[in-house]
Image (cartoon, rainbow over all chains, first blue to last red; front, side, top):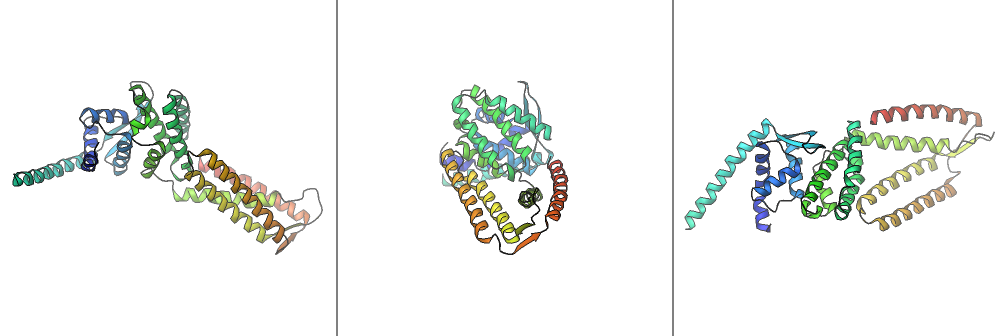
Length: 109
Length: 215
């Protein structure tokens, strides 16, 4: 990941993590794989786990330890009602931001 | 929750055996860094976090990734990053631990000095008594901080801790040599023994209550 890309991702990644969790409960490794499959190939645990901690602390996600298909207990993350609202806000803010960037882009052309 | 904590601890021991050599070194350093900070954070949350990350690391290993690649940073930085947002231990709990250490120090330094088979009065300097406790606490905090700072540098930490231990014992000896009779208080032999027995009972009950409370 380039420095520019990582700087651009700051703030956006939280919303993306929330979006993945909103589509179904996941555990840490699974979440990272889903993000990688979605094109964020360079995301690492060192970035994602603290985001999960923050989202949980803020009340946007909750976690539950339960048996996984493979056997051992896993910590599954689920989106909360507050998290749904945060996700909605994120989506709106992101679209506004994209619009602004697009406007600047078109003006320059 | 305590049962869960023990269960996760046991599972950590079992799962870490499945790590390859490289990932094991990484995990050991990560676990050690978390462990050194155990007192300041909610222990059950910390153990659960370590367990969760270990399981994910094992998945990453099966997927052909190394721990460094999976977490994207070295073990100590990863642990510090996890600690940044981890729920801290209640200050009241920390205070209780400090109070227990303090009371234990006071009790044992009195109790160990009683001459049980002698009729001589029990003599002690309250100044030495208090100074010993203060030094004991200062060194305890310093030991803890050094352990935190020197994670992963075992030989250096052993050398420094050994030097500190010598320094602490030396300080106790010097205080005892020069201040032994300063502001000394003499307690009659029988009274000192009765006080010792009463304190032992109170300390025993208090320690048991403290242990149950902590659990």
